[in-house]
Image (tube, rainbow, N blue to C red; front, side, top):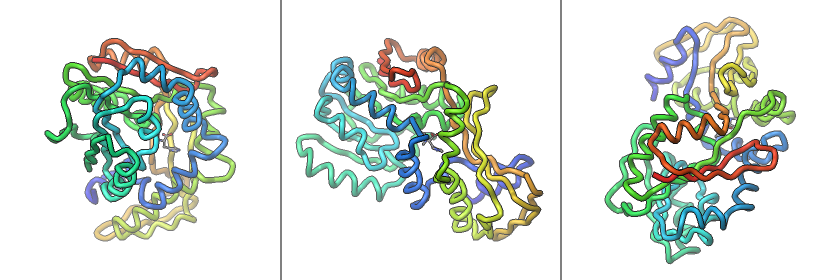
Length: 301
Ligand code: AVI
């Protein structure tokens, strides 16, 4: 992790992986982002699920093994239990302790569902233990987190999910769609400055991980929709010439120089359906909101 971070900071165009945005405070700030009026994805996706839950359950069928990728507090999947009635629930997350307490709570509420929590970085591997039923696996990947991967990485992840679906599984996934630039710009640069705090908090996290001396007051949040690349870009920009030091190294940043901290790709409906097809999925059903801002897809093998 250290080597990866230092290599990113020393690159000609410095960058860090978006996973470093999520320390304890970063995760809380992301929860706050989801409450912002400008950040439409969370509430738009939730409204699609609320409106079509039973239609989705009919399309998917009951009695699946529900594998929740990046489960977090497991709340999104738990809302689907009454309609989907899964036989087994398998939340997967890199943050094991957080997952353990969420699953303990859910076990009391839904004693009839077998639950197997897994600590795994599913962006690089999809090794499910034998305790996970092979029949009717339903992978659940809401929140448009697929957008935080490059299209090549996203295609690789979809291919690995397809491989793990076996012969009768599927994928239920949420995807944020291309829309007018001012809406996207505001969603990632809100008036209250919560997204700015989320981005700047990365520097505090790096100070802890690298024993570095970033001063958040020397940096400013920059986020904009890059229409050519179909993605939101988040950066941290140096407010003045400065040198950052960490244990074993340092880098000089000129005023205006940026660290690229996150991309959030936006897809067209057609473009995403093609990606699912290329990954080897067959029939796809989709649900969207009236404005066509967000898409939920169920793809069968
Ligand atoms: C987690 N992910 C889907 C969010 C997004 O919209 O790309 C992360 C985020 N970054 C800034 N605001 C929200």
